[in-house]
Image (cartoon, rainbow, N blue to C red; front, side, top):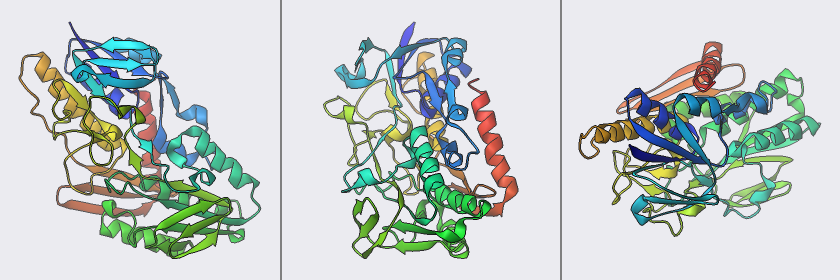
Length: 376
Protein backbone atom coordinates (compact mmCIF):
# COMPACT_ATOMS: atom_id res chain seq x y z
CA UNK A 1 0.00 0.00 0.00
CA UNK A 2 1.33 3.44 -0.96
CA UNK A 3 2.10 5.88 1.86
CA UNK A 4 0.59 9.34 1.53
CA UNK A 5 1.67 12.13 3.86
CA UNK A 6 -0.36 15.34 4.17
CA UNK A 7 1.22 18.36 5.85
CA UNK A 8 -1.37 20.45 7.70
CA UNK A 9 -4.85 19.97 9.12
CA UNK A 10 -6.71 22.96 7.67
CA UNK A 11 -9.26 23.26 4.89
CA UNK A 12 -7.07 22.03 2.02
CA UNK A 13 -5.65 19.09 3.98
CA UNK A 14 -9.02 17.84 5.22
CA UNK A 15 -10.73 18.22 1.86
CA UNK A 16 -7.90 16.23 0.26
CA UNK A 17 -8.59 13.39 2.70
CA UNK A 18 -12.35 13.41 2.11
CA UNK A 19 -12.03 13.52 -1.67
CA UNK A 20 -9.40 10.78 -1.73
CA UNK A 21 -11.52 8.42 0.34
CA UNK A 22 -14.65 9.30 -1.67
CA UNK A 23 -12.75 8.23 -4.79
CA UNK A 24 -11.77 4.96 -3.18
CA UNK A 25 -8.07 5.77 -2.86
CA UNK A 26 -6.39 2.80 -1.17
CA UNK A 27 -3.47 4.47 0.59
CA UNK A 28 -1.94 4.68 4.05
CA UNK A 29 -2.61 8.34 4.93
CA UNK A 30 -0.72 10.22 7.65
CA UNK A 31 -1.46 13.83 8.63
CA UNK A 32 1.35 15.92 10.09
CA UNK A 33 0.28 18.90 12.21
CA UNK A 34 0.93 20.41 15.64
CA UNK A 35 -2.74 19.92 16.69
CA UNK A 36 -5.41 17.50 15.55
CA UNK A 37 -8.09 20.16 15.31
CA UNK A 38 -9.61 22.44 12.71
CA UNK A 39 -10.14 26.11 13.53
CA UNK A 40 -12.95 27.49 11.38
CA UNK A 41 -11.29 30.78 10.51
CA UNK A 42 -14.14 32.33 8.43
CA UNK A 43 -16.23 32.73 11.58
CA UNK A 44 -13.60 34.66 13.54
CA UNK A 45 -15.50 37.75 12.38
CA UNK A 46 -18.31 36.91 14.84
CA UNK A 47 -16.17 36.59 17.97
CA UNK A 48 -15.91 40.36 18.73
CA UNK A 49 -19.72 40.57 18.89
CA UNK A 50 -20.07 37.46 21.05
CA UNK A 51 -21.99 35.63 18.30
CA UNK A 52 -19.29 32.97 18.47
CA UNK A 53 -16.90 31.78 21.17
CA UNK A 54 -13.52 30.26 20.56
CA UNK A 55 -14.82 26.83 21.57
CA UNK A 56 -17.48 27.05 18.84
CA UNK A 57 -14.81 27.27 16.15
CA UNK A 58 -12.41 24.56 17.37
CA UNK A 59 -13.28 21.21 15.84
CA UNK A 60 -11.44 18.16 17.26
CA UNK A 61 -10.40 15.83 14.44
CA UNK A 62 -9.68 12.55 16.24
CA UNK A 63 -13.08 11.12 15.30
CA UNK A 64 -12.80 12.27 11.68
CA UNK A 65 -9.32 10.76 11.36
CA UNK A 66 -10.57 7.48 12.75
CA UNK A 67 -13.52 7.35 10.34
CA UNK A 68 -11.26 8.13 7.41
CA UNK A 69 -8.58 5.68 8.56
CA UNK A 70 -5.96 8.39 8.91
CA UNK A 71 -2.97 8.40 11.25
CA UNK A 72 -1.93 11.61 12.96
CA UNK A 73 1.73 12.55 13.47
CA UNK A 74 1.93 15.31 16.04
CA UNK A 75 4.66 17.67 14.96
CA UNK A 76 5.63 20.89 13.24
CA UNK A 77 7.23 20.65 9.80
CA UNK A 78 10.85 21.74 9.65
CA UNK A 79 11.77 20.73 6.13
CA UNK A 80 11.12 18.60 3.05
CA UNK A 81 14.05 16.83 1.41
CA UNK A 82 15.07 14.05 -1.01
CA UNK A 83 12.80 15.17 -3.81
CA UNK A 84 9.85 15.42 -1.41
CA UNK A 85 10.13 11.86 -0.16
CA UNK A 86 11.39 12.80 3.32
CA UNK A 87 9.65 15.16 5.76
CA UNK A 88 11.51 16.41 8.82
CA UNK A 89 9.45 17.47 11.84
CA UNK A 90 10.29 18.46 15.40
CA UNK A 91 9.06 14.99 16.36
CA UNK A 92 10.99 12.82 13.93
CA UNK A 93 11.13 12.11 10.20
CA UNK A 94 8.52 10.57 7.90
CA UNK A 95 8.94 9.03 4.48
CA UNK A 96 6.28 8.93 1.78
CA UNK A 97 5.33 7.82 -1.71
CA UNK A 98 3.07 10.85 -2.19
CA UNK A 99 3.27 14.21 -0.43
CA UNK A 100 0.61 16.91 -0.14
CA UNK A 101 1.72 20.25 1.28
CA UNK A 102 -1.20 22.12 2.87
CA UNK A 103 0.28 23.93 5.87
CA UNK A 104 -1.02 27.37 4.93
CA UNK A 105 0.97 30.56 4.68
CA UNK A 106 2.23 33.10 7.19
CA UNK A 107 1.88 36.84 7.52
CA UNK A 108 4.60 39.25 6.46
CA UNK A 109 5.75 41.33 9.43
CA UNK A 110 8.08 43.75 7.69
CA UNK A 111 6.01 46.87 8.44
CA UNK A 112 7.66 48.80 11.28
CA UNK A 113 5.51 48.81 14.39
CA UNK A 114 3.27 45.95 13.29
CA UNK A 115 3.38 44.67 16.87
CA UNK A 116 1.01 47.53 17.74
CA UNK A 117 -1.72 46.04 15.54
CA UNK A 118 -3.95 43.01 15.95
CA UNK A 119 -3.85 40.66 12.96
CA UNK A 120 -7.44 39.36 13.11
CA UNK A 121 -7.10 36.15 11.12
CA UNK A 122 -4.11 34.84 13.06
CA UNK A 123 -6.56 32.86 15.14
CA UNK A 124 -9.07 32.78 17.94
CA UNK A 125 -6.86 34.64 20.40
CA UNK A 126 -6.59 37.62 18.05
CA UNK A 127 -10.35 37.80 17.55
CA UNK A 128 -10.85 37.59 21.31
CA UNK A 129 -8.35 40.41 21.80
CA UNK A 130 -10.44 42.59 19.47
CA UNK A 131 -13.56 41.72 21.48
CA UNK A 132 -11.90 42.62 24.77
CA UNK A 133 -10.28 45.82 23.50
CA UNK A 134 -13.57 47.06 22.05
CA UNK A 135 -15.42 46.31 25.28
CA UNK A 136 -12.83 48.27 27.27
CA UNK A 137 -13.05 51.38 25.08
CA UNK A 138 -15.53 54.13 25.96
CA UNK A 139 -14.90 55.72 22.59
CA UNK A 140 -12.09 56.59 20.21
CA UNK A 141 -10.80 55.63 16.78
CA UNK A 142 -10.72 52.11 15.36
CA UNK A 143 -8.49 51.79 12.30
CA UNK A 144 -8.86 48.83 9.92
CA UNK A 145 -6.63 48.09 6.93
CA UNK A 146 -4.85 45.44 4.93
CA UNK A 147 -1.86 45.04 2.62
CA UNK A 148 -0.47 42.52 0.15
CA UNK A 149 2.80 40.82 -0.72
CA UNK A 150 4.58 43.20 -3.15
CA UNK A 151 6.21 40.23 -4.88
CA UNK A 152 2.89 38.43 -5.32
CA UNK A 153 -0.07 40.85 -5.23
CA UNK A 154 -2.63 38.03 -5.06
CA UNK A 155 -1.32 37.03 -1.63
CA UNK A 156 -3.83 39.13 0.25
CA UNK A 157 -6.75 38.40 2.54
CA UNK A 158 -8.86 41.53 2.35
CA UNK A 159 -12.37 40.12 2.55
CA UNK A 160 -12.29 39.38 6.29
CA UNK A 161 -11.09 42.92 7.00
CA UNK A 162 -14.20 44.37 5.37
CA UNK A 163 -16.21 41.98 7.54
CA UNK A 164 -14.45 42.98 10.76
CA UNK A 165 -14.93 46.65 9.84
CA UNK A 166 -18.63 46.33 9.06
CA UNK A 167 -19.21 43.98 11.98
CA UNK A 168 -17.71 46.47 14.43
CA UNK A 169 -19.82 49.25 12.94
CA UNK A 170 -22.99 47.17 13.36
CA UNK A 171 -22.03 46.03 16.86
CA UNK A 172 -21.42 49.58 18.09
CA UNK A 173 -24.77 50.68 16.65
CA UNK A 174 -26.55 47.82 18.35
CA UNK A 175 -24.88 48.80 21.62
CA UNK A 176 -25.87 52.46 21.20
CA UNK A 177 -22.19 53.50 21.21
CA UNK A 178 -21.45 54.22 17.55
CA UNK A 179 -21.58 58.01 18.01
CA UNK A 180 -18.58 57.80 20.36
CA UNK A 181 -16.37 56.04 17.83
CA UNK A 182 -14.59 57.03 14.66
CA UNK A 183 -14.02 54.18 12.19
CA UNK A 184 -11.26 54.59 9.60
CA UNK A 185 -10.47 52.19 6.76
CA UNK A 186 -7.02 52.53 5.16
CA UNK A 187 -5.42 50.87 2.14
CA UNK A 188 -2.70 51.47 -0.44
CA UNK A 189 -5.16 51.05 -3.30
CA UNK A 190 -7.75 53.62 -4.27
CA UNK A 191 -10.04 50.68 -5.10
CA UNK A 192 -9.47 48.16 -2.31
CA UNK A 193 -10.80 44.65 -2.84
CA UNK A 194 -10.36 44.67 -6.61
CA UNK A 195 -10.29 40.87 -6.76
CA UNK A 196 -13.96 40.95 -5.85
CA UNK A 197 -14.70 42.95 -8.99
CA UNK A 198 -15.43 46.61 -9.70
CA UNK A 199 -19.11 46.35 -8.81
CA UNK A 200 -18.30 44.86 -5.41
CA UNK A 201 -15.68 47.52 -4.70
CA UNK A 202 -18.16 50.27 -5.51
CA UNK A 203 -20.75 48.72 -3.21
CA UNK A 204 -18.25 48.30 -0.36
CA UNK A 205 -17.09 51.91 -0.58
CA UNK A 206 -20.67 53.12 -0.88
CA UNK A 207 -21.60 51.21 2.27
CA UNK A 208 -18.67 52.79 4.13
CA UNK A 209 -19.85 56.24 3.10
CA UNK A 210 -23.43 55.54 4.24
CA UNK A 211 -22.22 54.25 7.58
CA UNK A 212 -19.96 57.21 8.24
CA UNK A 213 -16.76 55.17 7.95
CA UNK A 214 -13.83 57.35 6.90
CA UNK A 215 -11.41 56.14 4.22
CA UNK A 216 -7.70 56.83 3.76
CA UNK A 217 -6.94 55.32 0.36
CA UNK A 218 -4.05 55.41 -2.10
CA UNK A 219 -1.28 55.95 0.44
CA UNK A 220 1.65 53.66 1.19
CA UNK A 221 2.06 52.44 4.75
CA UNK A 222 5.07 53.88 6.59
CA UNK A 223 4.69 52.49 10.11
CA UNK A 224 2.31 51.76 12.93
CA UNK A 225 2.65 53.26 16.38
CA UNK A 226 0.92 52.40 19.63
CA UNK A 227 -1.72 55.06 19.01
CA UNK A 228 -1.21 56.14 15.42
CA UNK A 229 -1.22 54.97 11.80
CA UNK A 230 1.42 56.66 9.63
CA UNK A 231 1.21 56.66 5.83
CA UNK A 232 3.06 58.67 3.18
CA UNK A 233 -0.13 60.70 2.83
CA UNK A 234 -0.28 61.67 6.48
CA UNK A 235 -0.98 60.14 9.88
CA UNK A 236 -4.03 59.73 12.07
CA UNK A 237 -4.59 58.72 15.68
CA UNK A 238 -5.98 55.27 16.50
CA UNK A 239 -6.97 53.66 19.79
CA UNK A 240 -7.27 50.22 18.19
CA UNK A 241 -5.55 49.07 14.99
CA UNK A 242 -6.63 46.00 13.03
CA UNK A 243 -4.22 45.28 10.21
CA UNK A 244 -3.89 42.31 7.85
CA UNK A 245 -0.45 42.18 6.22
CA UNK A 246 0.24 40.28 3.02
CA UNK A 247 0.92 36.56 3.00
CA UNK A 248 4.02 34.55 2.18
CA UNK A 249 5.02 30.90 2.47
CA UNK A 250 5.97 29.19 5.74
CA UNK A 251 9.45 29.79 7.11
CA UNK A 252 10.38 26.10 6.89
CA UNK A 253 10.48 26.34 3.08
CA UNK A 254 13.89 27.96 3.44
CA UNK A 255 16.41 25.21 2.83
CA UNK A 256 13.78 22.69 1.70
CA UNK A 257 13.78 21.07 -1.72
CA UNK A 258 10.44 22.64 -2.68
CA UNK A 259 10.70 25.37 -5.35
CA UNK A 260 9.40 28.79 -4.40
CA UNK A 261 7.59 31.56 -6.24
CA UNK A 262 8.78 35.20 -6.13
CA UNK A 263 6.41 35.78 -3.20
CA UNK A 264 7.84 32.88 -1.18
CA UNK A 265 5.16 30.24 -1.79
CA UNK A 266 5.49 26.69 -3.11
CA UNK A 267 5.54 26.95 -6.91
CA UNK A 268 2.85 24.76 -8.49
CA UNK A 269 1.36 24.10 -11.91
CA UNK A 270 -2.32 24.08 -12.93
CA UNK A 271 -2.77 20.54 -11.56
CA UNK A 272 -1.40 21.63 -8.13
CA UNK A 273 1.71 19.52 -8.69
CA UNK A 274 4.83 21.11 -7.23
CA UNK A 275 7.01 22.13 -10.15
CA UNK A 276 9.91 19.81 -10.92
CA UNK A 277 9.01 17.14 -8.34
CA UNK A 278 7.30 13.81 -8.75
CA UNK A 279 4.26 12.87 -6.64
CA UNK A 280 4.43 16.11 -4.65
CA UNK A 281 1.39 18.40 -4.58
CA UNK A 282 0.28 21.54 -2.76
CA UNK A 283 -3.14 23.05 -2.02
CA UNK A 284 -4.37 26.16 -0.26
CA UNK A 285 -2.50 29.24 0.94
CA UNK A 286 0.91 27.54 0.96
CA UNK A 287 1.08 27.47 -2.83
CA UNK A 288 1.42 29.80 -5.80
CA UNK A 289 -0.69 28.70 -8.77
CA UNK A 290 -1.25 29.87 -12.35
CA UNK A 291 -4.53 31.66 -12.83
CA UNK A 292 -6.23 35.04 -13.21
CA UNK A 293 -5.03 37.98 -11.13
CA UNK A 294 -8.28 37.89 -9.12
CA UNK A 295 -7.71 34.35 -7.82
CA UNK A 296 -8.20 34.58 -4.07
CA UNK A 297 -6.51 33.03 -1.07
CA UNK A 298 -9.67 31.77 0.61
CA UNK A 299 -11.03 28.52 2.02
CA UNK A 300 -13.26 27.94 -0.99
CA UNK A 301 -10.33 28.10 -3.41
CA UNK A 302 -8.30 25.84 -1.12
CA UNK A 303 -11.09 23.26 -1.29
CA UNK A 304 -11.11 23.42 -5.09
CA UNK A 305 -7.35 22.94 -5.24
CA UNK A 306 -7.57 20.06 -2.78
CA UNK A 307 -10.18 18.40 -4.98
CA UNK A 308 -7.80 18.54 -7.94
CA UNK A 309 -5.00 17.08 -5.83
CA UNK A 310 -7.21 14.18 -4.73
CA UNK A 311 -8.39 13.51 -8.28
CA UNK A 312 -4.82 13.39 -9.56
CA UNK A 313 -3.48 11.16 -6.79
CA UNK A 314 -6.46 8.80 -6.92
CA UNK A 315 -6.09 8.47 -10.69
CA UNK A 316 -2.37 7.77 -10.43
CA UNK A 317 -2.94 5.15 -7.71
CA UNK A 318 -5.24 3.38 -10.20
CA UNK A 319 -2.53 3.54 -12.85
CA UNK A 320 -4.00 6.53 -14.62
CA UNK A 321 -0.68 8.18 -15.44
CA UNK A 322 0.65 11.66 -14.64
CA UNK A 323 -1.51 14.49 -13.22
CA UNK A 324 -3.98 15.93 -15.72
CA UNK A 325 -6.87 17.27 -13.61
CA UNK A 326 -6.66 21.05 -13.28
CA UNK A 327 -8.20 22.94 -10.39
CA UNK A 328 -11.15 25.26 -10.95
CA UNK A 329 -10.62 28.94 -10.22
CA UNK A 330 -13.64 30.44 -8.51
CA UNK A 331 -14.28 33.21 -6.01
CA UNK A 332 -17.38 32.87 -3.87
CA UNK A 333 -17.90 34.73 -0.63
CA UNK A 334 -20.49 36.48 1.48
CA UNK A 335 -19.19 39.75 2.90
CA UNK A 336 -20.95 39.77 6.26
CA UNK A 337 -21.97 42.85 8.25
CA UNK A 338 -23.15 40.99 11.36
CA UNK A 339 -26.83 41.40 10.51
CA UNK A 340 -26.75 41.05 6.71
CA UNK A 341 -24.42 40.02 3.89
CA UNK A 342 -23.44 40.72 0.29
CA UNK A 343 -22.69 37.80 -2.06
CA UNK A 344 -19.76 38.11 -4.47
CA UNK A 345 -19.16 35.50 -7.18
CA UNK A 346 -16.51 35.30 -9.87
CA UNK A 347 -15.62 32.57 -12.35
CA UNK A 348 -14.21 33.02 -15.82
CA UNK A 349 -15.91 36.05 -17.37
CA UNK A 350 -18.80 35.91 -14.87
CA UNK A 351 -18.64 38.38 -12.01
CA UNK A 352 -21.66 39.55 -10.06
CA UNK A 353 -22.76 40.67 -6.63
CA UNK A 354 -26.05 40.27 -4.83
CA UNK A 355 -27.07 43.23 -2.66
CA UNK A 356 -27.00 43.06 1.11
CA UNK A 357 -29.75 41.05 2.75
CA UNK A 358 -30.42 39.32 6.04
CA UNK A 359 -30.94 36.04 4.18
CA UNK A 360 -27.29 36.05 3.06
CA UNK A 361 -26.13 36.51 6.67
CA UNK A 362 -28.15 33.47 7.69
CA UNK A 363 -26.90 31.56 4.64
CA UNK A 364 -23.33 32.14 5.81
CA UNK A 365 -24.18 30.84 9.26
CA UNK A 366 -25.93 27.81 7.79
CA UNK A 367 -22.91 27.04 5.62
CA UNK A 368 -20.67 27.15 8.70
CA UNK A 369 -22.93 24.63 10.44
CA UNK A 370 -22.98 22.24 7.50
CA UNK A 371 -19.22 22.48 6.94
CA UNK A 372 -18.37 21.74 10.55
CA UNK A 373 -20.85 18.87 10.73
CA UNK A 374 -18.63 17.08 8.23
CA UNK A 375 -15.96 16.74 10.91
CA UNK A 376 -18.14 16.16 13.99
